[in-house]
Image 1 (cartoon, rainbow, N blue to C red):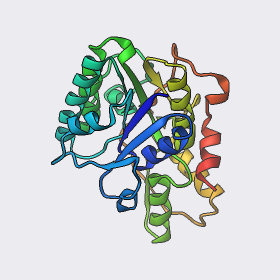
Image 2: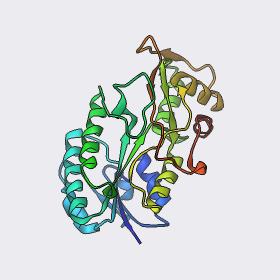
Image 3: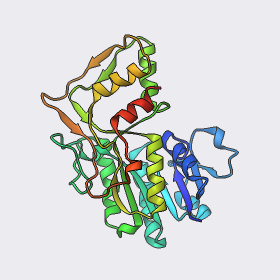
Image 4: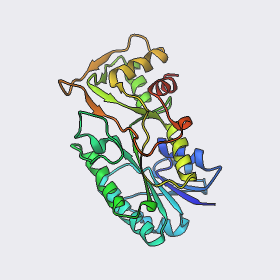
Length: 269
């Protein structure tokens, strides 16, 4: 049985991945601030600023590492440098959760798996740095999963939306932003499939179709029965701008794909 180590397993995405995979693999995880994981023998406390990742790798000896880390970009880069050395020396695998923001400098069209990356944001450039290190390795060593905005009824974005509207404050929507989306549960199912089938390379895990940001948020509010929501329209361009990651060559089975309507229904309950 493959041993999996999820870095950032106490976070929103990390917890869902852990729950999805733990019945099928020997899964371990890390936590930082969630003390509820302290007594779980499959979780280790990990502080990027003080703890050495090499010690944790030596302890767990994972066959597959899934990186869901968040926090200081410089510290994350240092951790991933050690992770890449580990997989190079052991022929193990690293699953890196990347982002549609690696394409945020391209606004005229959606982006596909093998398009050139270019970002204007600090977050996007950070993700590109780690992607580029992985792309220098043999393809069997890595999976790069590029994600759009991740929603779901318990997602931080939906919680923020509901809390903002509960306070009677205006929630910012971007009418010129064309995006695709996904849910954390479908993401976990897709990752499970990719690991089970020993897939490699780059995958785009967004919905098959696209939607404007304001339309998506309005539809979620309708399903959640949020009365008289107050929105603040924020325009960043005179034309539609795209921030969407669509698959072209690395297609998933139909039962693992998702549509914007499905994400809205899952997020609006």
